Amino acid sequence: MKKLFFLLILVFGIIHSKAQTESLIMNNTESYIGTIDDKTKIKVGFYSVFLDKDSPETYKVKGYSDVEGTKSNFSGTIILNIERTKKSPKGNLKIYDFKFSEEGTGKHNGTFSGDMLSLSLGKLAFIGFEGNWENYEQSLKFPVYFDNSNKIYNLKK
Image 1 (cartoon, helix red, strand yellow):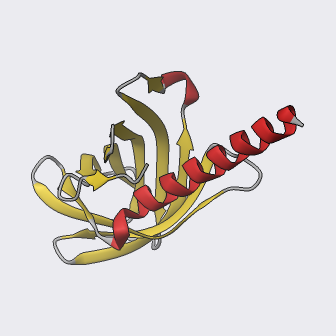
Image 2 (tube, one colour; image 1 turned 135 degrees about the vertical axis):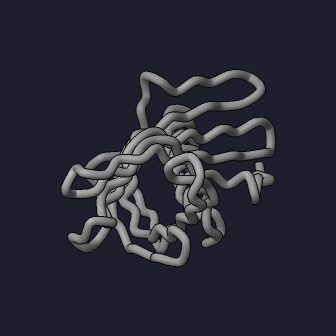
């Protein structure tokens, strides 16, 4: 009976943690803010984030990028990189690999890829994305960074 009780607590904790991660990535439906090509402002937002049933480390996402008023929808994945995740008594650093593919085939459509960092310290949470954007023609490639530093979360524990 004790084993079953502890198993249920463990399962509930994992489900709660995954739901909290989905909520954090959604950023209360507010845009992440950053730069592309180290100088041009970019906003990135998510319409949906859900855990892949077949791969518990993978989140499927749909969202948009907005570069100087030009919006493009995308879909993709965010996958937990367990080897690079760090835990400490004061907080956790989870590192994910992300890849988002934009809709369309024009010169200014392509893929975002890189690392997503999720840092929680006590009751505060921060998410940042760092990587590259490359167009489908492979004629343009820019560094990209966006985060939720405009809205650091106060986690409910």
